[in-house]
Image (tube, helix red, strand yellow):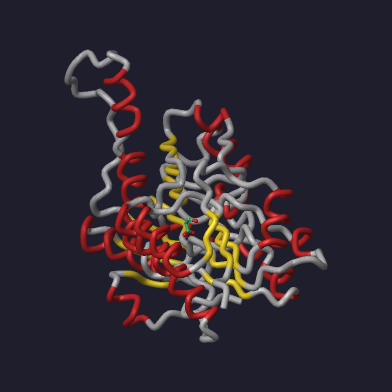
Length: 323
Ligand code: DGY
């Protein structure tokens, strides 16, 4: 029997590409250039499985095609708001993701952003590399103390909890959070955290606000002009979730007008485009979507996809099916 044909849309860690090649008839993207809409449409017509990631946009229109052959989208990543899930499901396509294995690394990046923006690490590095450092002085690049402050978390899933744990037990911070469903207070206490009723309650209480909810329609522009106005003027926003959770234009305006003090961002509304007005600001730390970018995690993510599609083609339920 011929092996299922698989398209991997980007370069993946070597060990994962090797594992895929052992089991399937695999086409790799050696050039690692993101596929355009036409190429993705062709891929859905030509392969039994397509393994996309966050840089692949798969809107409803791509699934309105009688010639689709693909039976499973094995997404590389936990977030899947780049795929129109309802349209894919309507075509009978199964979708899987890679939860669990990127929790710690994404929480670490949120902490890196929090520390960098509060302590002005990016500004300091830029100054030093530019040869502009003139020496120690009491008023030089004075930032905001982190230890003992209050952090507000929006979305108390795996990554929100891991971040809470770091903030509370690592930095002695008070942790409050908003989550759509109620979390058992005893469970929240394991992470040193306390649930508040509304997003606004969290914003009003927090010196740092960190987003850990999914992207997509339900949370689109959750952080808008009114919500920035509800934050303390001395507070910082951290986003390692998805760009569309934040109204980027409203964020830029809030930063420019001093409505909030700063932001640490790993994700953007129109990646890889980052508005110039954001890059021009010193009170902003910008990373290029690095949340899960460690050797260990990227390999583990890929191996999860291998497990998911292996189960699917063996007629078993994929362990990480989302639709
Ligand atoms: C994820 O897993 O969602 C990462 O952000 C990469 O897509």
